[in-house]
Image 1: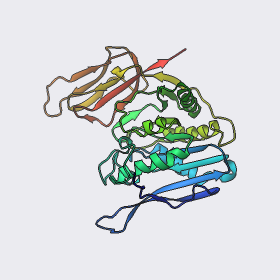
Image 2 (image 1 turned 45 degrees about the vertical axis):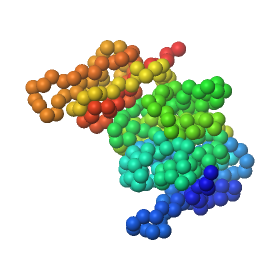
Image 3 (image 1 turned 90 degrees about the vertical axis):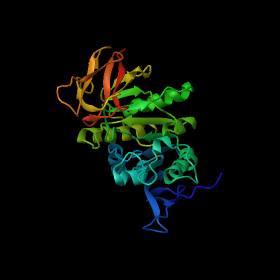
Image 4 (image 1 turned 180 degrees about the vertical axis):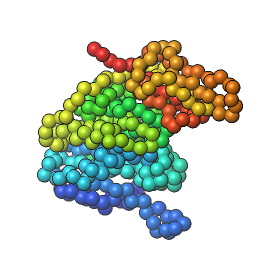
Length: 331
C-alpha cells in the first residue's frame, strides 16, 4: 500500500508538550502548493498508556472541540504518565466551514474508514488515523454531538462487541466519563465508521452525543470537559479522583428505537428530550407547509422508552430521523 502523504510537524517519540499540525498537501486554485493543516497537540511523559482524543469528526459539532482546545492549552507534561494526543478538529475543513461533511470532497469522515492514502482529502485523513495514529493508542475518545440537525440528551456510549473483555473495558471507560446518561448504543449504519476502525484494532473506545442544534451550551461543554479528564484519570494517565455524579443507564435492544419520517413538513413534538413514552404514544405531528386546513401526520412510539434524540430544527424531509428512543436500565 502507498505511503500516506500526511506528515506531522511534531515528534511522536519526544517527551514534553508539542503543538503542531498534521500537514496534508492539497493543491487547489488559490494555492498550487497549498496544504490542509490539522492542529495537533501531544503531551508525553515517559512510558505509559496513550490516549487519542478527537473532536469535530463532523464539522458542526462543538462540545468536543471546546473541551479539547482547553485541554491542549492547559495540560502539562509533568501531570501526565504516558501520552495524550489531542486533535480538536479531526475534519478541519468541515469544522472551518461549519458543515457535517468536508466542503472539499463532500465525504463524511465518519463513513470514510479505513480510508485511502491516494483517495480524496477526507479519505487520506482517515487512512492516516487508521494506519498511523490508532496503532499508537490504547484508549480512544471521539466526541460527537447532534450538529445542526439533531439534538441529544448528553450521553457517553460504548457498543456491544464480540470480544467480551474489550467490551468490558469500553463499558468501564464509558462509565468513568460519567455523562448524565450512559448507553450501549446501536448505530443506524456502522459501515466505514471511525468507531468500527478503532474497535477492530482492539482499542478501548468511548464516543459521545452531547447536545446539538449546531451550538454548545455552558452545560454541554462542561459535560465534555469533565468527561475527558475523568477518562484520562481512569486510564492512569492523569492522577486524581474521578468527578462523579449520577448517570442514568440506557440500552437499545433493536432498530425499533429509530423513528423516521416519510413526509416533509413542520414538526410538532409531543414529548421533550429525556421524557419517557409507552409504545403507541404520540411522539410528533408533521404539518403540511404548502396548505392550511390539512390535518397533520402523526408519528407514534414503536417501543417503550426514553426520548434521547430528536430532529432539529423545525422542518423535516422525508427520510429524516425524527426521533430516537432508548430503554432505561433501573436495576
